[in-house]
Image (cartoon, rainbow, N blue to C red; front, side, top):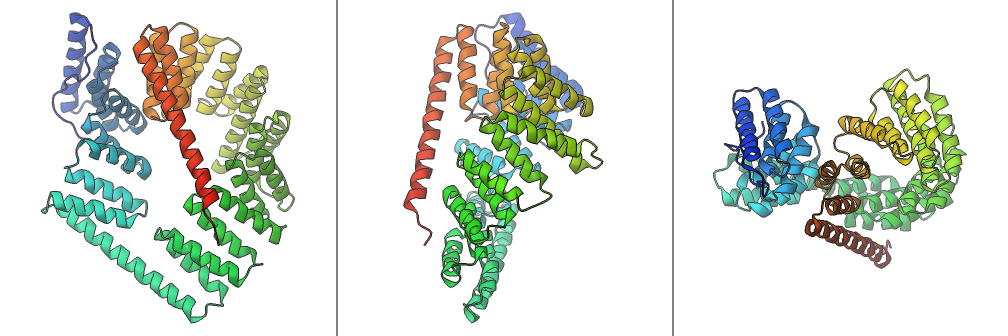
Amino acid sequence: MPQDTGDAQPTNATSGANGAKSAAVETALQRGKAAGDAGDYQAAEEAFEEAVAGDPNNARARYDLALARQNLGDPDGAVVSYRRAIHLDPSLIEAYINLGNLYSELGQDEDAHEIFESALELDSGNDELFIRLGDTYRNMGYYEDAVLAYRQAQILNPENELAINALHETRLHIEEQAESISELERRVDDDPRDLSRYSDLCDAYLDARREQDALNLVNQMIALAPEDPTTYETQATVFEAMGRLDAAANAWERVTQLAPGDAEAWEHLGTWRYEQGMLDEAIAAYQEALKHTDDAPGLRFSLAETLRDAARYDDAVTQYRQLIDEFKDASDEQDEEALADAYAGLAAAYNLAERYDDALKTADEFLARFPDESEALYEQASAYDALGRHDEAIAAYERAIEGDPLNCGIYNDLADTYLAVGRVADAIEMAETAVSLDPEFVVGYETLAQALHAAGREDEANLALQHAAELHAALEADDDEDDAGEDDSTSE
Protein backbone atom coordinates (compact mmCIF):
# COMPACT_ATOMS: atom_id res chain seq x y z
CA MET A 1 0.00 0.00 0.00
CA PRO A 2 1.27 3.50 -0.74
CA GLN A 3 2.22 5.65 2.21
CA ASP A 4 -0.12 8.43 3.31
CA THR A 5 1.64 11.15 5.24
CA GLY A 6 -1.19 12.78 7.11
CA ASP A 7 -3.10 15.95 6.55
CA ALA A 8 -2.91 17.49 3.12
CA GLN A 9 -1.08 20.78 3.27
CA PRO A 10 -0.17 22.66 0.11
CA THR A 11 3.61 22.82 -0.31
CA ASN A 12 3.63 25.16 -3.30
CA ALA A 13 0.71 27.54 -2.98
CA THR A 14 0.25 29.64 -6.09
CA SER A 15 1.65 33.11 -5.64
CA GLY A 16 -1.01 35.79 -5.73
CA ALA A 17 -3.97 33.38 -5.79
CA ASN A 18 -7.09 35.03 -4.46
CA GLY A 19 -8.52 33.95 -1.13
CA ALA A 20 -11.63 32.34 -2.55
CA LYS A 21 -9.63 30.17 -4.94
CA SER A 22 -7.20 29.12 -2.20
CA ALA A 23 -10.10 28.27 0.10
CA ALA A 24 -11.74 26.17 -2.61
CA VAL A 25 -8.51 24.25 -3.19
CA GLU A 26 -8.07 23.67 0.54
CA THR A 27 -11.68 22.47 0.82
CA ALA A 28 -11.14 20.03 -2.05
CA LEU A 29 -7.96 18.72 -0.43
CA GLN A 30 -9.69 18.14 2.89
CA ARG A 31 -12.64 16.48 1.17
CA GLY A 32 -10.28 14.19 -0.71
CA LYS A 33 -8.42 13.36 2.48
CA ALA A 34 -11.64 12.43 4.24
CA ALA A 35 -12.76 10.27 1.33
CA GLY A 36 -9.41 8.50 1.26
CA ASP A 37 -9.51 7.84 4.99
CA ALA A 38 -12.96 6.30 4.46
CA GLY A 39 -11.65 4.08 1.65
CA ASP A 40 -13.65 5.87 -1.04
CA TYR A 41 -10.74 6.39 -3.43
CA GLN A 42 -12.94 7.28 -6.38
CA ALA A 43 -14.35 10.26 -4.48
CA ALA A 44 -10.84 11.08 -3.27
CA GLU A 45 -9.52 11.10 -6.85
CA GLU A 46 -12.30 13.45 -7.96
CA ALA A 47 -11.63 15.83 -5.07
CA PHE A 48 -7.88 15.89 -5.65
CA GLU A 49 -8.38 16.43 -9.38
CA GLU A 50 -10.51 19.44 -8.45
CA ALA A 51 -7.70 20.70 -6.20
CA VAL A 52 -5.12 20.26 -8.98
CA ALA A 53 -7.34 22.11 -11.44
CA GLY A 54 -7.64 24.96 -8.94
CA ASP A 55 -3.92 25.08 -8.16
CA PRO A 56 -1.78 23.27 -10.79
CA ASN A 57 1.43 24.13 -8.91
CA ASN A 58 0.36 22.46 -5.68
CA ALA A 59 2.73 19.53 -5.21
CA ARG A 60 0.75 18.09 -2.29
CA ALA A 61 -2.42 17.97 -4.36
CA ARG A 62 -0.55 16.08 -7.06
CA TYR A 63 0.85 13.69 -4.46
CA ASP A 64 -2.55 13.01 -2.91
CA LEU A 65 -4.00 12.47 -6.36
CA ALA A 66 -1.27 9.89 -7.00
CA LEU A 67 -2.18 8.11 -3.75
CA ALA A 68 -5.83 7.90 -4.77
CA ARG A 69 -4.97 6.61 -8.24
CA GLN A 70 -2.60 4.01 -6.86
CA ASN A 71 -5.27 2.76 -4.48
CA LEU A 72 -7.71 2.61 -7.40
CA GLY A 73 -5.36 0.29 -9.28
CA ASP A 74 -4.25 2.92 -11.80
CA PRO A 75 -0.43 2.62 -11.70
CA ASP A 76 0.19 4.71 -14.83
CA GLY A 77 -1.95 7.55 -13.54
CA ALA A 78 -0.19 7.32 -10.19
CA VAL A 79 3.24 7.48 -11.84
CA VAL A 80 2.26 10.62 -13.75
CA SER A 81 1.01 12.33 -10.59
CA TYR A 82 3.99 11.28 -8.44
CA ARG A 83 6.33 12.56 -11.14
CA ARG A 84 4.50 15.86 -11.32
CA ALA A 85 4.62 16.21 -7.53
CA ILE A 86 8.38 15.62 -7.52
CA HIS A 87 8.87 18.05 -10.40
CA LEU A 88 7.00 20.72 -8.47
CA ASP A 89 8.62 19.96 -5.11
CA PRO A 90 11.92 18.05 -5.39
CA SER A 91 12.05 17.74 -1.59
CA LEU A 92 8.80 15.76 -1.27
CA ILE A 93 10.37 12.57 0.07
CA GLU A 94 7.06 10.70 0.38
CA ALA A 95 6.53 10.95 -3.37
CA TYR A 96 9.94 9.41 -4.06
CA ILE A 97 9.29 6.54 -1.65
CA ASN A 98 5.87 5.67 -3.04
CA LEU A 99 7.00 6.06 -6.65
CA GLY A 100 10.05 3.86 -6.08
CA ASN A 101 7.90 1.21 -4.42
CA LEU A 102 5.41 1.39 -7.28
CA TYR A 103 8.16 0.96 -9.87
CA SER A 104 9.43 -2.07 -7.93
CA GLU A 105 5.93 -3.60 -7.90
CA LEU A 106 5.76 -3.07 -11.66
CA GLY A 107 9.13 -4.77 -12.17
CA GLN A 108 10.77 -1.54 -13.39
CA ASP A 109 13.87 -1.96 -11.27
CA GLU A 110 16.07 0.56 -13.07
CA ASP A 111 13.45 3.27 -12.59
CA ALA A 112 13.03 2.23 -8.95
CA HIS A 113 16.80 2.38 -8.44
CA GLU A 114 16.95 5.91 -9.85
CA ILE A 115 14.14 7.10 -7.59
CA PHE A 116 15.54 5.49 -4.42
CA GLU A 117 18.94 7.04 -5.13
CA SER A 118 17.28 10.44 -5.41
CA ALA A 119 15.35 9.83 -2.20
CA LEU A 120 18.55 8.98 -0.33
CA GLU A 121 20.02 12.31 -1.40
CA LEU A 122 17.19 13.84 0.63
CA ASP A 123 17.21 11.38 3.53
CA SER A 124 20.53 9.54 3.80
CA GLY A 125 19.68 8.26 7.27
CA ASN A 126 16.64 6.24 6.20
CA ASP A 127 17.41 2.54 6.70
CA GLU A 128 14.21 1.46 4.91
CA LEU A 129 15.32 3.33 1.80
CA PHE A 130 18.64 1.48 1.81
CA ILE A 131 16.75 -1.81 1.97
CA ARG A 132 14.66 -0.78 -1.03
CA LEU A 133 17.80 0.25 -2.87
CA GLY A 134 19.41 -3.08 -2.04
CA ASP A 135 16.38 -4.91 -3.38
CA THR A 136 16.64 -3.10 -6.71
CA TYR A 137 20.35 -3.91 -6.95
CA ARG A 138 19.63 -7.55 -6.25
CA ASN A 139 16.84 -7.67 -8.83
CA MET A 140 19.22 -6.21 -11.42
CA GLY A 141 21.94 -8.71 -10.55
CA TYR A 142 24.29 -6.29 -8.78
CA TYR A 143 24.73 -8.39 -5.66
CA GLU A 144 27.87 -6.71 -4.32
CA ASP A 145 26.12 -3.34 -4.48
CA ALA A 146 23.12 -4.89 -2.75
CA VAL A 147 25.40 -6.02 0.08
CA LEU A 148 26.64 -2.46 0.57
CA ALA A 149 23.08 -1.11 0.66
CA TYR A 150 21.84 -3.72 3.15
CA ARG A 151 24.92 -3.23 5.29
CA GLN A 152 24.28 0.51 5.41
CA ALA A 153 20.71 -0.18 6.50
CA GLN A 154 22.11 -2.28 9.36
CA ILE A 155 24.56 0.45 10.32
CA LEU A 156 21.66 2.87 10.58
CA ASN A 157 19.43 0.40 12.40
CA PRO A 158 21.14 -2.71 13.82
CA GLU A 159 17.75 -4.14 14.81
CA ASN A 160 16.28 -4.07 11.29
CA GLU A 161 15.47 -7.74 10.67
CA LEU A 162 14.68 -7.13 6.98
CA ALA A 163 18.17 -5.78 6.40
CA ILE A 164 19.77 -8.63 8.35
CA ASN A 165 17.86 -11.31 6.43
CA ALA A 166 18.35 -9.66 3.04
CA LEU A 167 22.09 -9.33 3.63
CA HIS A 168 22.33 -12.97 4.66
CA GLU A 169 20.39 -14.16 1.58
CA THR A 170 22.51 -12.01 -0.73
CA ARG A 171 25.73 -13.31 0.79
CA LEU A 172 24.54 -16.90 0.27
CA HIS A 173 23.78 -16.14 -3.37
CA ILE A 174 27.21 -14.61 -3.91
CA GLU A 175 28.86 -17.66 -2.35
CA GLU A 176 26.81 -20.05 -4.50
CA GLN A 177 27.61 -17.99 -7.58
CA ALA A 178 31.33 -18.07 -6.73
CA GLU A 179 31.25 -21.84 -6.18
CA SER A 180 29.54 -22.34 -9.54
CA ILE A 181 32.13 -20.17 -11.29
CA SER A 182 34.97 -22.04 -9.59
CA GLU A 183 33.57 -25.36 -10.78
CA LEU A 184 33.27 -24.06 -14.35
CA GLU A 185 36.80 -22.66 -14.19
CA ARG A 186 38.11 -26.04 -13.04
CA ARG A 187 36.27 -27.68 -15.93
CA VAL A 188 38.04 -25.38 -18.39
CA ASP A 189 41.36 -25.98 -16.65
CA ASP A 190 40.91 -29.74 -17.03
CA ASP A 191 40.95 -29.38 -20.83
CA PRO A 192 41.67 -25.81 -21.94
CA ARG A 193 41.74 -26.85 -25.60
CA ASP A 194 38.07 -27.89 -25.52
CA LEU A 195 36.25 -24.81 -26.82
CA SER A 196 32.85 -26.11 -25.74
CA ARG A 197 33.82 -25.68 -22.08
CA TYR A 198 34.23 -21.92 -22.31
CA SER A 199 30.72 -20.67 -23.12
CA ASP A 200 29.09 -21.66 -19.81
CA LEU A 201 31.91 -20.00 -17.88
CA CYS A 202 31.52 -16.85 -19.96
CA ASP A 203 27.79 -16.77 -19.21
CA ALA A 204 28.52 -17.22 -15.49
CA TYR A 205 30.98 -14.34 -15.53
CA LEU A 206 28.37 -12.12 -17.19
CA ASP A 207 25.71 -13.14 -14.66
CA ALA A 208 28.13 -12.14 -11.89
CA ARG A 209 28.79 -8.80 -13.64
CA ARG A 210 32.42 -9.82 -14.19
CA GLU A 211 32.54 -8.45 -17.72
CA GLN A 212 36.32 -8.03 -17.90
CA ASP A 213 36.84 -11.67 -16.86
CA ALA A 214 34.36 -12.66 -19.57
CA LEU A 215 36.24 -10.58 -22.14
CA ASN A 216 39.59 -12.10 -21.14
CA LEU A 217 38.06 -15.55 -21.53
CA VAL A 218 36.71 -14.70 -24.98
CA ASN A 219 40.15 -13.53 -26.07
CA GLN A 220 41.49 -16.95 -25.08
CA MET A 221 38.72 -18.56 -27.14
CA ILE A 222 39.67 -16.48 -30.17
CA ALA A 223 43.35 -17.38 -29.78
CA LEU A 224 42.34 -21.04 -29.57
CA ALA A 225 39.98 -20.98 -32.57
CA PRO A 226 40.46 -17.76 -34.57
CA GLU A 227 38.33 -18.97 -37.49
CA ASP A 228 35.38 -20.25 -35.45
CA PRO A 229 32.43 -17.83 -35.83
CA THR A 230 30.90 -18.90 -32.50
CA THR A 231 33.84 -17.35 -30.65
CA TYR A 232 33.02 -13.97 -32.16
CA GLU A 233 29.34 -14.44 -31.34
CA THR A 234 30.38 -14.87 -27.72
CA GLN A 235 32.65 -11.84 -28.00
CA ALA A 236 29.75 -9.78 -29.35
CA THR A 237 27.58 -10.86 -26.43
CA VAL A 238 30.24 -9.71 -23.97
CA PHE A 239 30.69 -6.36 -25.68
CA GLU A 240 26.90 -5.88 -25.64
CA ALA A 241 26.88 -6.52 -21.88
CA MET A 242 29.69 -3.98 -21.49
CA GLY A 243 27.81 -1.39 -23.52
CA ARG A 244 30.58 -1.22 -26.13
CA LEU A 245 28.44 -0.59 -29.16
CA ASP A 246 31.13 -0.24 -31.83
CA ALA A 247 33.03 -3.28 -30.64
CA ALA A 248 29.86 -5.39 -30.60
CA ALA A 249 29.08 -4.35 -34.18
CA ASN A 250 32.60 -5.22 -35.31
CA ALA A 251 32.36 -8.63 -33.65
CA TRP A 252 29.12 -9.40 -35.48
CA GLU A 253 30.71 -8.23 -38.73
CA ARG A 254 33.49 -10.74 -38.16
CA VAL A 255 30.88 -13.47 -37.70
CA THR A 256 29.32 -12.60 -41.07
CA GLN A 257 32.74 -12.77 -42.71
CA LEU A 258 33.35 -16.24 -41.33
CA ALA A 259 29.75 -17.46 -41.81
CA PRO A 260 28.23 -15.40 -44.66
CA GLY A 261 25.08 -17.53 -44.70
CA ASP A 262 24.22 -16.87 -41.03
CA ALA A 263 21.01 -14.81 -41.17
CA GLU A 264 20.96 -14.23 -37.42
CA ALA A 265 24.47 -12.75 -37.50
CA TRP A 266 23.50 -10.38 -40.31
CA GLU A 267 20.44 -9.33 -38.34
CA HIS A 268 22.54 -8.63 -35.24
CA LEU A 269 24.95 -6.64 -37.36
CA GLY A 270 22.05 -4.62 -38.75
CA THR A 271 20.78 -3.91 -35.25
CA TRP A 272 24.11 -2.56 -34.04
CA ARG A 273 24.80 -0.59 -37.21
CA TYR A 274 21.40 1.00 -36.67
CA GLU A 275 22.35 1.86 -33.08
CA GLN A 276 25.53 3.45 -34.42
CA GLY A 277 23.46 5.62 -36.76
CA MET A 278 24.95 3.86 -39.79
CA LEU A 279 21.59 3.43 -41.50
CA ASP A 280 22.77 2.47 -44.98
CA GLU A 281 24.99 -0.24 -43.53
CA ALA A 282 22.12 -1.45 -41.33
CA ILE A 283 19.81 -1.67 -44.34
CA ALA A 284 22.40 -3.65 -46.29
CA ALA A 285 22.84 -6.05 -43.36
CA TYR A 286 19.11 -6.60 -42.95
CA GLN A 287 18.69 -7.18 -46.68
CA GLU A 288 21.53 -9.70 -46.61
CA ALA A 289 19.89 -11.46 -43.67
CA LEU A 290 16.65 -11.78 -45.62
CA LYS A 291 18.50 -13.63 -48.37
CA HIS A 292 19.27 -16.42 -45.92
CA THR A 293 15.94 -16.92 -44.16
CA ASP A 294 12.38 -17.56 -45.29
CA ASP A 295 10.23 -16.52 -42.35
CA ALA A 296 11.50 -13.45 -40.51
CA PRO A 297 8.78 -10.84 -39.86
CA GLY A 298 10.81 -9.31 -37.02
CA LEU A 299 13.69 -8.81 -39.42
CA ARG A 300 11.40 -7.20 -41.97
CA PHE A 301 10.04 -4.83 -39.32
CA SER A 302 13.62 -3.81 -38.51
CA LEU A 303 14.32 -3.22 -42.18
CA ALA A 304 11.15 -1.15 -42.60
CA GLU A 305 11.95 1.00 -39.56
CA THR A 306 15.49 1.61 -40.77
CA LEU A 307 14.31 2.52 -44.28
CA ARG A 308 11.87 4.98 -42.69
CA ASP A 309 14.57 6.53 -40.51
CA ALA A 310 16.84 6.80 -43.55
CA ALA A 311 14.09 8.83 -45.28
CA ARG A 312 13.56 6.08 -47.86
CA TYR A 313 9.85 6.43 -47.35
CA ASP A 314 8.61 4.69 -50.49
CA ASP A 315 10.65 1.60 -49.67
CA ALA A 316 9.45 1.70 -46.07
CA VAL A 317 5.83 1.99 -47.21
CA THR A 318 6.29 -1.06 -49.44
CA GLN A 319 7.65 -3.09 -46.52
CA TYR A 320 4.89 -2.05 -44.13
CA ARG A 321 2.16 -2.76 -46.69
CA GLN A 322 3.56 -6.24 -47.25
CA LEU A 323 3.52 -6.84 -43.51
CA ILE A 324 -0.09 -5.61 -43.26
CA ASP A 325 -1.10 -7.98 -46.07
CA GLU A 326 0.67 -10.82 -44.29
CA PHE A 327 -1.00 -10.25 -40.92
CA LYS A 328 -4.40 -8.79 -41.88
CA ASP A 329 -6.06 -12.16 -41.25
CA ALA A 330 -4.35 -12.49 -37.88
CA SER A 331 -5.98 -15.01 -35.58
CA ASP A 332 -3.74 -15.00 -32.51
CA GLU A 333 -2.48 -12.31 -30.17
CA GLN A 334 1.06 -12.30 -31.52
CA ASP A 335 -0.08 -11.77 -35.10
CA GLU A 336 -2.54 -9.10 -33.94
CA GLU A 337 0.33 -7.22 -32.33
CA ALA A 338 2.36 -7.52 -35.52
CA LEU A 339 -0.53 -6.15 -37.56
CA ALA A 340 -0.89 -3.18 -35.21
CA ASP A 341 2.85 -2.51 -35.45
CA ALA A 342 2.67 -2.60 -39.24
CA TYR A 343 -0.20 -0.11 -39.32
CA ALA A 344 1.67 2.17 -36.90
CA GLY A 345 4.83 2.01 -38.98
CA LEU A 346 2.96 2.73 -42.21
CA ALA A 347 1.12 5.72 -40.76
CA ALA A 348 4.36 7.10 -39.34
CA ALA A 349 6.12 6.68 -42.70
CA TYR A 350 3.35 8.59 -44.45
CA ASN A 351 3.54 11.40 -41.89
CA LEU A 352 7.31 11.65 -42.23
CA ALA A 353 6.93 11.71 -46.01
CA GLU A 354 4.39 14.55 -45.60
CA ARG A 355 1.70 12.39 -47.20
CA TYR A 356 -0.79 13.41 -44.55
CA ASP A 357 -3.96 12.30 -46.33
CA ASP A 358 -2.48 8.81 -46.70
CA ALA A 359 -1.51 8.91 -43.02
CA LEU A 360 -5.09 9.77 -42.06
CA LYS A 361 -6.47 7.01 -44.24
CA THR A 362 -4.07 4.51 -42.67
CA ALA A 363 -4.94 5.71 -39.16
CA ASP A 364 -8.64 5.26 -39.95
CA GLU A 365 -8.00 1.68 -41.11
CA PHE A 366 -5.86 1.13 -38.02
CA LEU A 367 -8.61 2.40 -35.69
CA ALA A 368 -11.28 0.38 -37.49
CA ARG A 369 -9.33 -2.77 -36.60
CA PHE A 370 -7.98 -1.57 -33.24
CA PRO A 371 -10.35 1.01 -31.71
CA ASP A 372 -8.71 3.50 -29.31
CA GLU A 373 -5.20 2.26 -30.14
CA SER A 374 -2.92 5.04 -28.88
CA GLU A 375 -0.37 4.74 -31.71
CA ALA A 376 -3.14 5.10 -34.29
CA LEU A 377 -4.51 8.13 -32.50
CA TYR A 378 -1.06 9.67 -32.24
CA GLU A 379 -0.35 9.32 -35.96
CA GLN A 380 -3.84 10.61 -36.72
CA ALA A 381 -3.21 13.62 -34.50
CA SER A 382 0.16 14.28 -36.14
CA ALA A 383 -1.46 14.33 -39.57
CA TYR A 384 -4.27 16.61 -38.42
CA ASP A 385 -1.67 18.92 -36.88
CA ALA A 386 0.33 19.15 -40.10
CA LEU A 387 -2.85 19.94 -42.03
CA GLY A 388 -3.73 22.74 -39.62
CA ARG A 389 -6.75 20.87 -38.27
CA HIS A 390 -5.74 21.63 -34.70
CA ASP A 391 -9.01 20.97 -32.90
CA GLU A 392 -9.17 17.46 -34.36
CA ALA A 393 -5.49 16.98 -33.54
CA ILE A 394 -6.08 17.98 -29.91
CA ALA A 395 -8.95 15.52 -29.57
CA ALA A 396 -6.81 12.71 -31.01
CA TYR A 397 -3.77 13.56 -28.84
CA GLU A 398 -5.94 13.62 -25.72
CA ARG A 399 -7.35 10.18 -26.56
CA ALA A 400 -3.84 8.89 -27.29
CA ILE A 401 -2.70 9.99 -23.83
CA GLU A 402 -5.57 8.05 -22.25
CA GLY A 403 -4.14 4.88 -23.79
CA ASP A 404 -0.46 5.72 -23.24
CA PRO A 405 -0.25 8.09 -20.26
CA LEU A 406 3.50 7.70 -19.73
CA ASN A 407 4.55 8.76 -23.24
CA CYS A 408 6.24 12.13 -22.82
CA GLY A 409 6.36 12.70 -26.59
CA ILE A 410 2.58 12.80 -26.88
CA TYR A 411 2.33 15.39 -24.09
CA ASN A 412 4.99 17.49 -25.82
CA ASP A 413 3.24 17.43 -29.20
CA LEU A 414 -0.07 18.23 -27.56
CA ALA A 415 1.58 21.18 -25.83
CA ASP A 416 2.73 22.45 -29.23
CA THR A 417 -0.79 22.19 -30.58
CA TYR A 418 -2.30 23.92 -27.57
CA LEU A 419 0.13 26.75 -28.22
CA ALA A 420 -0.96 26.92 -31.83
CA VAL A 421 -4.56 27.58 -30.77
CA GLY A 422 -3.67 29.95 -27.95
CA ARG A 423 -4.39 27.60 -25.03
CA VAL A 424 -1.24 28.65 -23.21
CA ALA A 425 -2.09 27.37 -19.73
CA ASP A 426 -2.92 23.94 -21.15
CA ALA A 427 0.35 24.00 -23.13
CA ILE A 428 2.31 24.68 -19.95
CA GLU A 429 0.53 21.83 -18.16
CA MET A 430 1.34 19.35 -20.94
CA ALA A 431 4.95 20.48 -21.29
CA GLU A 432 5.45 20.29 -17.52
CA THR A 433 4.06 16.75 -17.57
CA ALA A 434 6.41 15.78 -20.42
CA VAL A 435 9.56 16.92 -18.60
CA SER A 436 8.42 15.49 -15.27
CA LEU A 437 8.06 12.07 -16.90
CA ASP A 438 11.49 12.37 -18.49
CA PRO A 439 13.73 14.92 -16.75
CA GLU A 440 16.27 14.58 -19.60
CA PHE A 441 13.75 15.36 -22.36
CA VAL A 442 15.50 18.28 -24.07
CA VAL A 443 12.72 19.02 -26.56
CA GLY A 444 10.22 19.06 -23.72
CA TYR A 445 12.09 21.85 -21.95
CA GLU A 446 12.27 23.81 -25.20
CA THR A 447 8.52 23.48 -25.63
CA LEU A 448 8.00 24.47 -22.01
CA ALA A 449 10.12 27.57 -22.58
CA GLN A 450 7.96 28.56 -25.56
CA ALA A 451 4.79 28.11 -23.52
CA LEU A 452 6.13 30.08 -20.58
CA HIS A 453 7.26 32.84 -22.94
CA ALA A 454 3.76 32.96 -24.42
CA ALA A 455 2.43 33.36 -20.87
CA GLY A 456 4.78 36.27 -20.24
CA ARG A 457 6.74 34.30 -17.63
CA GLU A 458 10.13 35.28 -19.02
CA ASP A 459 12.31 34.33 -16.05
CA GLU A 460 10.87 30.81 -15.97
CA ALA A 461 11.13 30.54 -19.75
CA ASN A 462 14.81 31.46 -19.61
CA LEU A 463 15.40 28.87 -16.88
CA ALA A 464 13.74 26.19 -19.01
CA LEU A 465 15.90 27.14 -22.01
CA GLN A 466 19.00 27.11 -19.83
CA HIS A 467 18.08 23.66 -18.55
CA ALA A 468 17.57 22.42 -22.12
CA ALA A 469 20.99 23.75 -23.13
CA GLU A 470 22.64 22.09 -20.12
CA LEU A 471 20.98 18.76 -20.90
CA HIS A 472 22.00 18.99 -24.53
CA ALA A 473 25.61 19.72 -23.57
CA ALA A 474 25.61 16.84 -21.07
CA LEU A 475 24.28 14.41 -23.67
CA GLU A 476 26.92 15.51 -26.16
CA ALA A 477 29.62 15.08 -23.51
CA ASP A 478 28.36 11.57 -22.74
CA ASP A 479 28.46 10.69 -26.44
CA ASP A 480 32.02 12.03 -26.75
CA GLU A 481 33.05 10.06 -23.66
CA ASP A 482 31.52 6.88 -25.06
CA ASP A 483 33.32 7.40 -28.36
CA ALA A 484 36.61 7.99 -26.54
CA GLY A 485 36.07 4.83 -24.51
CA GLU A 486 35.53 2.81 -27.66
CA ASP A 487 38.69 4.25 -29.26
CA ASP A 488 40.87 3.75 -26.18
CA SER A 489 39.77 0.21 -25.32
CA THR A 490 41.02 -2.92 -27.02
CA SER A 491 39.60 -6.41 -27.27
CA GLU A 492 42.86 -8.31 -27.44
